[in-house]
Length: 620
Image 1 (cartoon, helix red, strand yellow):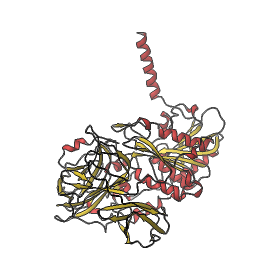
Image 2 (cartoon, helix red, strand yellow):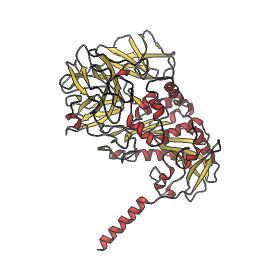
Image 3 (cartoon, rainbow, N blue to C red):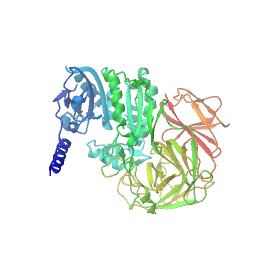
Image 4 (cartoon, rainbow, N blue to C red):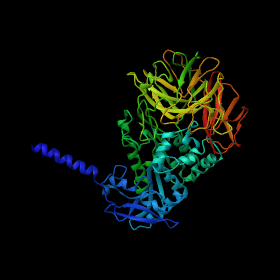
């Protein structure tokens, strides 16, 4: 009986602790330069008279942090060596009265830091922390270059808003936009009014891409199952090469086996991610952030600046790796050819495959890099899709050796359709020996945009004609282990993550008749459909290893002249933009003049026989 009462007492205390809240030291309204006020919770530990401060700017209600502070400090404020300031964005929650039509959140961050350093408990050092929107606002604040903004830890975030932020492969990521609207951003009207790449998108992309404005050290934290991961892996090398020269070597990247978070139990730093568990990744984001802040805000001699530029988790092998390069992308590619009997081969494929795409009964979203309370998030088993007739699969034999892929996998496919428009959705999976088909990542392409995303690029299909399209998947670092199989699912939709194509060739994102489409994929010697893998070596079953065809380019980033070295003799090259559009073609003589290109990310493609090599480079 005593034991039962003791258990009950412990249970009651645990429940009370779970639902108790930490009281801020005080709550205050901070005046901004336009005279409006932002609502702020301030937490100051008892003990020292002066503290460095960690600033969090949130659109998700600052009072949520009364349940516990981040980085493991939770409700034990006095264990923290920092003061904490948590601010509601103007127009949200406690700062709703400060709403304006076009807020400058970077200026608001600057003004909040001004207020912090004027407080008696502040020692003048301010760092910033936060995931997603709380990470983007850190970049907005960095751009204003406050002298007391010492360092920043943005998680699952980068500052650029691009066309493919909402229209991946030309397809609206419907569920994520709906989730953002539900959170109060009100983006649908403007996004849906601009379904084509346009001057408006170009302006938005240019004004939100500013690595040259970074003047402080950052620890950028991302996850392989996050929808931002590819953009972060473009942003990071730019921050290492274009930021203020004094901090170019003080940009760090941590990529773990994590989801974006916000819609389920999984989050950045948790061990459970979807249907998989990564015990050795638990709290890594917190421990590295604490070390980073300790070095820059507390002057702790912890040797932080000897940390590798990139710390990343190799999925599949499930181990931490380190790199001092600016990118972990493999600069050579190997091709797997699609073939009849659902095969992925090193050799030449044969035959064709056909499936039906019915918009009224779309293929369901099962996990992935989603952002919706109605969808699972992270790695989930796709095996239930094998019973569907509205998709086709292609897989390798069981691998005889480990296969490491690091970069963006692409499906280069030849397709015919009896409707003017359709989508191609591709899911990349690892087939385990026990039969699970665990999702790694996925992508999609709207076929009217196979030539580009502007209104002028739009091109509908004619029944009986064969068209080439490329579906690009997000950046991944993954090892398929020996005994596993690499597999892809190809379907005409992936709902409700992405908008379902009505396939009638009419106006997008409006009501209309739905047309079922017969989609035929060609994968023979004339129409070589292939899966392009950024990988150094590829061994499949008893098939031969792909021949060595290696090429490197330099310098990267480049300003005017681009050079390369290759293991074979060839001359032709093509330079493409991030949308796959050909910009420059020619024959290499001594160097390639790229001075005419604007600053940004580009790809150079080399061809040799049946193999291609695609290398990404940055034009400074």
